[in-house]
Length: 226
Ligand code: CA
Image (spheres, rainbow, N blue to C red):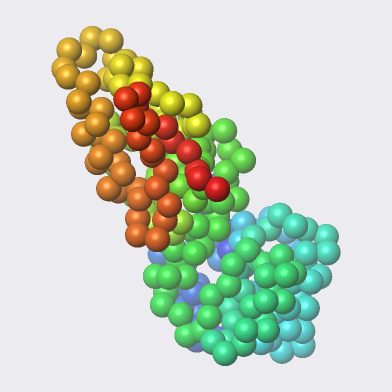
């Protein structure tokens, strides 16, 4: 089913760009230009995400967010704020906005944030495995670290699933080999080290903590170091 995004933005040009781009990405959208129209549309219900401009006629985005959050802590909201307004960002986040993006924004960045917020919303799903900001969806086979999408080969994917399902447990090479390659695999256990290296290269992005740790003389453990 298509995700429904409510666009609240009084600058028609921006609203139209958002409508178009989100449409291309496969979202269902509606756009409104004022605070009261937004409130009415919001109440019609069932939005997967609200993109909310702060500077709006009739009622500010901040006030609108306050009203939404007084009854609903679930629906994700991304605020669109002016570049120099630190105050709006802070009060937006304090009031329970999930994220914000400053204007003028790059559409690719906005789309990445939309995907990230919707993904986090889905993590109650049983097919989703998480370690810090690494999220793996077994059903869609999507893997992401923060806002980055990670491309794994089928074997790398299976190995990462196994590590995530056994989080914080030290696993030796034989265990990993049997679980991921199967008992009928007659190769060297070195293949495990090779694949761990491949995965690390892909998931340990710059600025993100390492997740797979080597336990000398034993094997590997996936954990999030606090
Ligand atoms: Ca505005």
